[in-house]
Amino acid sequence: MEVPEQFYTQVEETCRDLYIQSLKEIPPDVVAAIRCAAKNETTEVARRIFSHYLQSIELGREKNMMVCQDTGIPIYWVEIGGRLRLDGSRINQAIIKGTERATREHPLRSSIVSPLSRENRQTSTGHRIPIIHYDFAPDSDVLDILFMPKGSGSENMSFMKMLVPADGVKGIKRFVLEQVVGAGAKPCPPTIVGVGIGGSSDLCMTLAKKATTRPLGSANPDPQLAALETELLNAINETGIGPQGLGGRTTALAVHIESAWTHITCNPVAVNLQCWRAERRRARLRPNGSIEIGF
Amino acid sequence: MAEFHLHTPLSEADVRQLRVGDSVTLDGVVFGVRDGNLIRIFDNKVPPPVNWQGAALLHTAPNVKKIGPAKYEPICVGTTTSMRMDRFTEGLLKDYGVRAILGKGGLSEQSAKLMQQYGAVYLSVTGGAAAMETLQIEAIETVYWEDLMPECIWQIRFKGLGPLTVGIDAHGGNLQLDVQQQAQQKTAELLKKMGIA
Ligand code: SF4
Image 1 (tube, chains in turn red, green):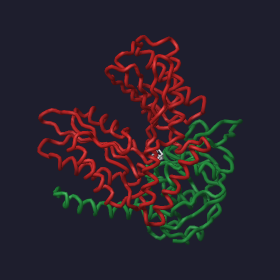
Image 2: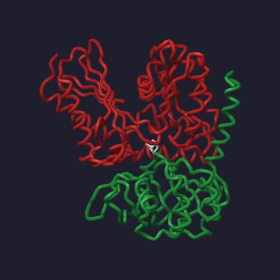
Image 3: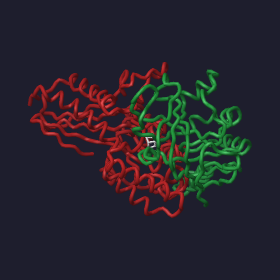
Image 4: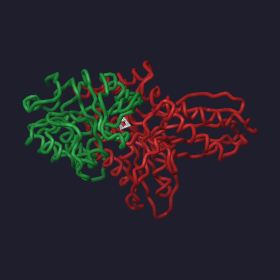
């Protein structure tokens, strides 16, 4: 199904809106998990921190304010329905333009710089930024765009290791636990712990990031991986790091694992943390002009 | 755990009375700093353009709207991970007389020692809760080094910033480090329990 000409403008405007709205409205599954964790804390300090989280969530929704100051690295996960006929390069351009317009029109702080010169174009874009991942969905006429403004406090807490097959699943467990504990307060816990297992080094890291975009309450469909998610979550929450690393019962809201097959000599594992605000926002666009907004 | 309401600039006595876990609410001017401007001060040896005796510094890079020359309105002002700026603690305390560093995630053991020596504290701001902090701003009074945007030095006047949590006191206490060390110990036990020692 050929998309109409105005579809590209719609994608651009939608991406602008996704960026701005994602910074103001925390996904409902995340809000529910934060509320639940807040009730579970016993110390004065941990309770204080959670009450600040909840106040900021409310202000975001009610006063249309940004919840956190970090506009993040703009990352898009795009899934193209197999029945759509469109110009991929124009979609790419529209996403970039939408990102720039959000930054200029709101305005938002541009957090993107050149890695060596540290030049900031004040557009939230630059060479290879925004990051856009493409995937395809069979038998669908939907362009699904999931946006995340990935905060740097948690993004700086990213870890990858090429374990060897002899390290087994034990090596994976050790690596995840030690990295989350080592990250401590820096990623603004409680976090969503994204874990990638398998693939090549680059795919493994991408899977860890993708895992953080899964809604809370979803388990990996593979029962062995689902059990590993639960085991790791329980262990992490026993470490006592707590909100903002000031001590408490909830250090992670969830552990999400995504996996891929790998080489006979490889056993890669990657950890990517998502901060408590866990911002994400989704749009589902159809060629008839309908746009569904979700998370 | 006690609750304090303090005004900037801070005296040595103001900060010496605080203990880790206490809550502090701040009124008055707080200066926004971060990587870019601290690198200019300490690595490029350009002294700060404003007097920091008794100052409270906040690790931040705000979202703002320009409304005139060197005049900005806050859109969203929060905090950032302090550990990246850890190596500047000594200079800030010794050379410029700073009394409080505000940020998230805590500072090192070395910074805690320096705070004990010079009489300063680290106040933990709730990271990610910037909406709340933004409403506690009265005005962005002025801004220095605009060429570093958004990593300029921001002179922000707050009313009721907080409650902040004392993360490092001027007596050697370092709450986030203690929590981290306990977690490391616990991890060793957990690994054993999981059969991975
Ligand atoms: S780590 Fe996340 S929640 Fe914390 S300040 Fe950064 S972006 Fe905000």
